[in-house]
Length: 93
Image (cartoon, rainbow, N blue to C red):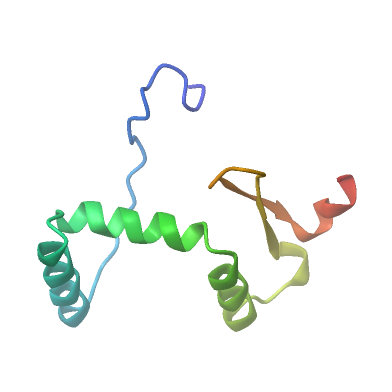
């Protein structure tokens, strides 16, 4: 299937996470205060985190093992969209 082709921005990829009771309660409380469903809020949080270059850098510094797999977030001009390139691919720019 061609990504984004004729889907009307429909979400088709599912990611299941397991939360501790503590974080599940926090998610539910925040979702209620924002008038969102917990799954919608979790999706929003994941999307914002994946588009945040500072958080990406912090996570890679904390958990990254190999320099070859390190990604560089590239924010497109006049857009919120962020793409990732592998550290070794930056020579192609």
